[in-house]
Length: 411
Image (cartoon, rainbow, N blue to C red):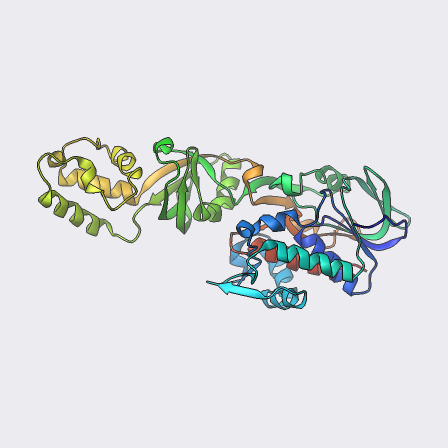
């Protein structure tokens, strides 16, 4: 976007994603000389993909229970730049917010509006964004820091690393900064995919691929209930996906990494109690003809593709005569529908993940400034830290808040 400068800058931000652009704008507004180095050929590529291209950028219900990580650090950062601060900032740069069920989007309904607004503000503040600048090395020198890229080198007094982790590497971060950061002495909590689906076994997933249904999901780790979510479950040929799966993904993937047994109990009819369902089965038996099959029990209650799979799960053949289904077997079918146990085998790859869990160990970071405790003048923002949120604008709020804190803190 701009010609490269040899001037000694107050701060260089590595990464032109959500947290990086926020950090750069914040520092520039405080009178600092700032530049951004970005590995990709355009800034804000991940922002364009958020919220199915609509950019759900924050949420009304913003509290630490929606995040995984160091709660004290998360609370400190959110206190410095809240949901209300985000709405005010977005309005200031030209984004009129639209709220729907507590979720905030740009009124345009387009994520590109957010990227354009950030680019406009960076241009207004004369912050250059140097594209296709993959960082090879970062080390302290007599001026502060020297950064070497494939093309050239830069010097600055402070560095803000906002390079992300490994999620959706085609849109941005690819982990190339990990070795650079480790050379500076920082350690990482293992980085794993999050907000993504899982390979699973327990039912014939190949026969229900494409089915979507409202369901309750209960995550069980080594047999103990960890959390419960409700929403639209997506059944795939490999296992389970959808928003409720994403919401339980962080503790689930961490448990899989630790070699624990991870299962999900699916309630396919959460609005109908077991007693009501058994009563309905009995009524259908009374109204049925002698030649009707067992699948008549679930017709109209569940997706047609799901019916034979759940019958089989309960030990009933779909073509079995309805008159042979005893009340005991109907109770077993009801139990299978309300408590269908599937075992999670592994998480999907990083390219399918919206974010990652894991990152730089937060005990090595000053919770008030996001400055490294190991190296003065080095700051971190966004996903690179061991903080991740559930779906609903929480990860972007973390990006805005942590970017703001880092941008405010550079000396």
